[in-house]
Image 1: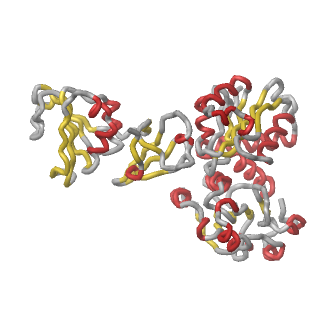
Image 2 (image 1 turned 90 degrees about the vertical axis):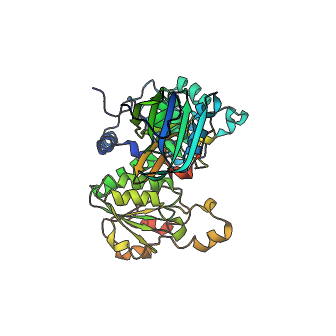
Image 3 (image 1 turned 30 degrees about the vertical axis):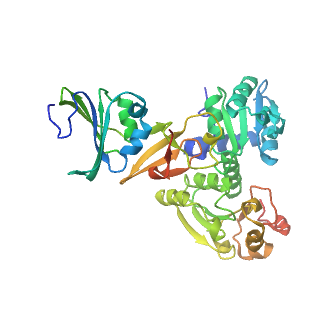
Amino acid sequence: MTKKLSVSAINTGTVIDHVRAGQALKIVKFLRILHDSQNKVTLGLNLSSNLVGFKDIIKIENYRLTEDEANQIAAFSPEATINIIDDFEVTHKNKIALPNIVEDVFICKNPACITHNEPMKSKFHLTEQGKKIHLTCYYCEKSFDKDQLKINS
Amino acid sequence: MVNPMYQRDILSIKDLSLENIHYILETASELKNNPKNNLLQGKIVAQCFFEPSTRTRLSFESATMRLGGHTLGFSSEDSLSIKKGETLHDTIKVISDYADLIVIRHNKEGAARLAAEISDKPVINAGDGANQHPTQALADLFAIKESQKKLDGLHIALVGDLKYGRTIHSFAQICMLFNVRLYLVSPKNLSLPEPIADILKKQGIRFSFHNSIEEIIPKIDILYMTRIQQERFDASEYQLIKDDYILTPEHLTNAKENLKVLHPLPRVNEIDIRVDDTPYAH
């Protein structure tokens, strides 16, 4: 597939497009590769979008997002698309699949949950209900709206 | 031939299918009628009770002994290295080497599921915080089946603390697998949590909210009473509501002949002791 994106001013890397407006900063906080490495990252916030009204965009130079990382992003924005860029051209465009389970990303809001007392990773089952994403803690079985939860940093 | 529950953890009613539940009830009935005192010969059951329990702990202990097995364990975390800061992870790792089965009660929700991940032996959840108490729900179901001779089509009232009671949560989940009609009687601030009510609706289970025991007595087959936990309230609030959900023999004058009253215990005052002498006490 050879399609030039209007935002693909990067030579090589990944463009995460159609991110739900307001989610880019949360994704950056979560995806350690974005702030822990030397890769140049550009963010576009509240850009206009044909698809979803307003969108965010994340561009990472010289880094190809893994499938695992791509699917984790789905928990923040299931509509996002991953564009792999090579030599200014979009060589790969993938929609991401909402994973059934997401580990070590979100913090359970239930103060009585065992995950606060033990050295362990959090784990949540994900379901999409209309526009909302519901997370159910694998351990304490309580359910939350995704936006109610803080991210493990 | 290996039975379908072999080496399975029992952590939450959500994990059990209708077939699993029928299998458990049938096995219980068979063992009640034909006790076998050698099924657990040579086996050790670890009782890991990090918070207080009488009935549950003793029931597991006596069941193990009656089946020819042995128990070891503890009934509070006072005697443990937990006090020195040892994690549940390390405690369970060690104990799973000493036993063939772990029974755990803990005040943190999800503790039993974590224990099951750590242990290479099966784990039974004897109560985790306000989350689940699956063996209580199964025992209640067994009592109901024995007294009513069926599980489908029953009218069941749940009374008392429907918000924090883990026995209620587990019991409501188990009711979803059968065609039951539920009557929910509780103080307004102790109503059944919305997520559970939503699931009941999705499953097509009919239920209604009521303010008093009297209005539903003539309609029901099972009256499931629960303690309103004093520790959930401040002193003055508790004084206001505590007497509203007490069952007396007078309430039972219009009861159906087959009505049975159940209570997971401990009982404080929500069932008048005179009720024990009526034919409705199971």
